[in-house]
Length: 186
Length: 70
Image (cartoon, rainbow over the protein chains, first blue to last red):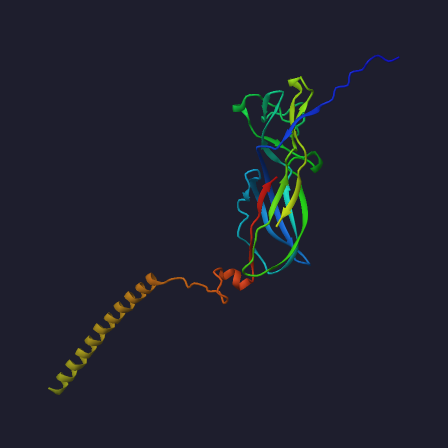
């Protein structure tokens, strides 16, 4: 008969929302029924927890036509900070990688003043800084000179920020961030 | 005697012409300078009364991208 075996597994000890989560948009296109029209190409970064307009992506000329889709390209690179509590102790992100999981796991600290951004990538979205392309159907919009179209790129990140590890063994604790849902809100 | 008068008349007329020519030149230069200083780039107005002439002439609207989270 086999002896007892110990299985070590990491569990989610706490979940929440990052305190800051920066998204870098590198391209925006809209579909006018026959072709994709490029509206923006570059790098515009915004903390989507704070929210607002992506810097430099405002007042862009949108040529006449009727558009039915929007395509947004962003980097698989998300500098984020955050804190979660477990067992009465607050843990904070640091820039240090945990367990060799580069850009996937942040080593936590209990020193609030040492909280720092960790650049996460989403494992299912490719390598760090890979372009992630998302295409969305929109309510058809016919552009005139009075059109001021301001859709919102929304990342659902609630409960995607997690403190992982083996309960009672703080040395095994680390932060990870699960892939957000991305949507366009008009 | 008549020859002398004629010569004098011609001389006066020529002098007057030169004096007026100098005055015209001066006035023209001043007008040109004033014209440059007062020049204002003409404002392009929309045929449709829109403030954005570019938008009006191209039929273009405006686009901005907002971001947020939930």
